[in-house]
Image (spheres, rainbow, N blue to C red):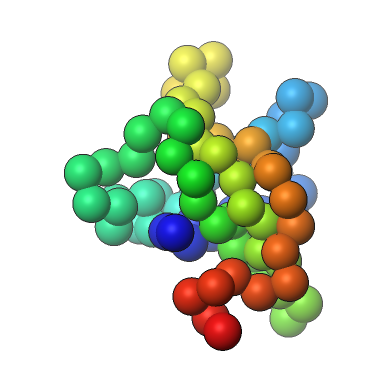
Length: 81
């Protein structure tokens, strides 16, 4: 599963996290074939106390950016074990 940078403070009222940061865009560009609605990813925020969240990608026409809707909090993503 692709890891995408996010900021825990950058969400909307519906519970999605904005993926409009430069680091997020770089991570999204690494997805083979590009990001797609419904794709499962791992959102990663590391400011000294890392947070990993399994999420589903969706494109927001309202905000004109990719967003991640959280599914569950992870201890550590499988790729880092």
